[in-house]
Image (tube, rainbow, N blue to C red; front, side, top):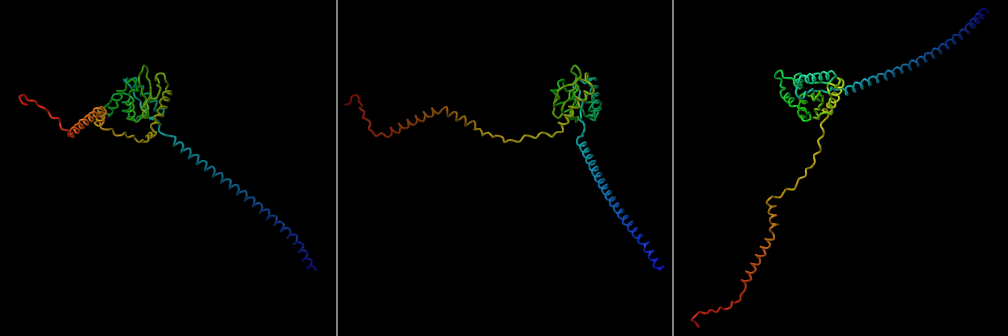
Length: 290
């Protein structure tokens, strides 16, 4: 009996414990599974968003930098190159003015010839020795007070100096500045007085015209017009033949009259030769005969 009682007690104690362990295990397992699934989903979403943002930033930055660099490189180029020429008698005032204008231009970023002897020859400074610029000095000395009459000389000086434009300094009452386009071999309209202008005005006056001259110089030459077929004139008749025709036109009445006269004379000769009539006898009387 005691044995059966012990078995019943053991079974009674064991049954609630198994139910409690099963419920606890099931609840724990379900909760853990759900939590892990949600965590994995959130992690995946965050990772995807980070990748997309990185790709967008990288692409935009690289494209923008490349476009900026390419645009800057295409738009940039060397500044215009000018030469300063003194026209007329190169006194100290004109030479100093030309040198001062060169300094203003280079400070503003414009280029000038690198050879100081060449720049001095264009200003009319005397030669310090054999520098091979006598031809340029001779051309500069021939520049008169009217620049429009010396366009070929200015173009030659511009080609020797390699300049896009020439700033001509001359005296006409006051000191005047004019800009010559080397490629077009023409002066730009307008002149600027040196004494009444500011440095900013002089730089703007020179730079705007020099930039236009540089653009014209860099443009390709115009396309030559298409060749057209030349009209070939008919060969002229010889002068002798024309002269003979004119003579015949003037003398044809006389020729016709001569032909008719010759025909008439020929007819009479032929007609007389063909007559067979006997001429009448002639009676001759002699004195003393019967």
